[in-house]
View 1 (tube, rainbow, N blue to C red):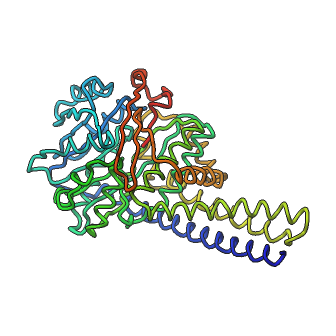
View 2 (cartoon, rainbow, N blue to C red; view 1 turned 180 degrees about the vertical axis):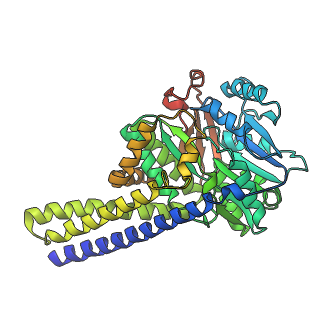
View 3 (cartoon, rainbow, N blue to C red; view 1 turned 135 degrees about the vertical axis):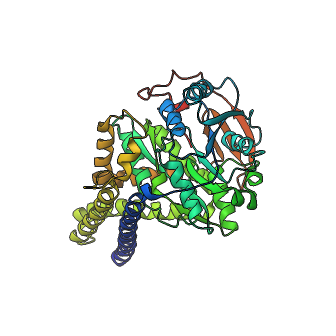
Length: 441
């Protein structure tokens, strides 16, 4: 029995240490790549008409600032397409105000109607991409809760134009906590760990809140048709681009700030929802995430159990689990420090500093607390993420912005149930919204 305990523990410890070392190398490479890309953003140039499609539902934190950022892109040849479910959506008034303030930018509102057999966001995007003018060469997609930098669209189009081999370019989100709560810190840490997995090649993965695609590629892979009857815009795009062998590039300059204010229950629901969608649309990546988070969680829990058993019964030498735990923690601190070092870099413009400026008047204290948490306590974030992943093992129903969806195997939508809550207060980036109106996708 003692030999079996030795063997099981050593196997788990070696696998966990190997995984932690690989993650440390990947995080270092992520920072190197992010620095090299952001350093050259000012030199990027691009030409060609672009359509920016922004599906909207309800009022997001900092929505007025986010809309203003879309109208103030430093790219001359573009138009904005805002897609809403109905004319009485609270977002419509905010959009019309922004359009009136910036008459020099071509912009229009598309009313998509209610989705009945697919996700409302997917339904909106299908409506927005129907009958595109022939002069549109590039399509850019952005979530309404995202604050893009002024050079966001220019960077996106320039990277698409650099090589015919690049069909799509994706950014990601950098969460900006509204308050220094445990829930916001946990979600910030989970999100930071995921973003560090992105490098130059994103392995076909697309994040739907900030990405772009060549018009030619969009039509060649039949993405608008592929979206029909589905819930996930980005994972369906990922699937179709992968099937066609079309390249997707991750661009750190297209990372967008996204304000959040969640409860602990919201964090669990958010992570579960992401992985539940992944289970249906990207099962290979879901299995990878399940295996990776399970190994990490079991390593920490197993080491704590080994320390307790060794202390009480001497089954294993106490120094062994203590040493493994110390190494795992040191590597987690190193990963947290490396990814958070992108916030402030001596003598150069940092990735997050310029991202934060796209969401003005941010209180730096909640972000500072989240940064410290990710450096010194990110194993807690990893454990919280694992619980969310485990939650995705069961169930087929998710709720997004007041609409409940039931998915069939393969991701087809079998039922759409609406239970919208009353409209939230007028836009205010310091307003903490009810859970029903917080960002859920």
